[in-house]
Length: 66
Image (cartoon, rainbow, N blue to C red; front, side):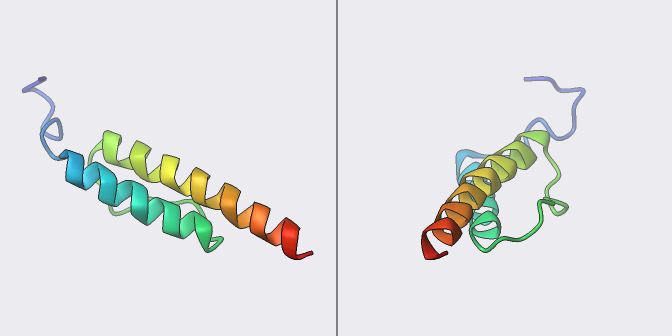
């Protein structure tokens, strides 16, 4: 663990899951990609991964409805 990085301990497995779920829901509802509330890079990455997965589902759903 890098003690010179103050955000190195700012996340847990639970916070990763929450960030992913929030990103997924944002993508699933077609929202723009911005994870502005997150402090640690790893949480931003989890949110973005969730957003990408959710957006993919959103787009698939839209194609099937068309």
